[in-house]
Image (cartoon, rainbow, N blue to C red; front, side):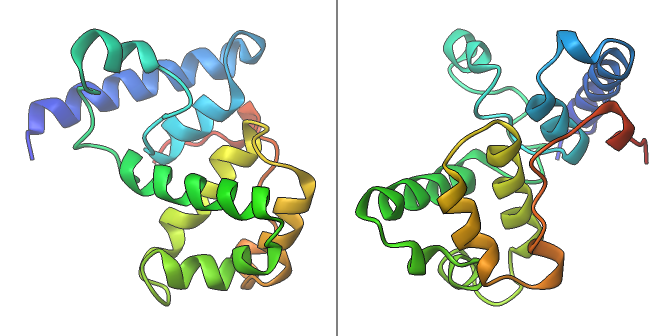
Length: 150
């Protein structure tokens, strides 16, 4: 991986989060969550993909857009079909990588969407109804108090 790209992303990440801490009302809480956790901000910053045909930091993200798109598409399809049994956390985990293979990525993907106000309460209730302890309280809010630098 390109070390200069990583350094540039980390500089952007820290600058964004410092701005968010200082003026949270000027920033998207979901976008701040994405930056904190190094996940691809697919609901935000679409202008980069339009302008450059790709996100220049694509290879740096811990959770990639392709994975997130698959999860969101499946949630949307099952929601429209009223098939809430299919979207319990353990079933999602099995579908998207198997037992514990992508657990953190799945949790971050779900929390990003929930913080951004995506999907209904019915969807979120179905997801957490069948979830391990680390996923049965998916974040629905994010604030500057949640920001820490590692």
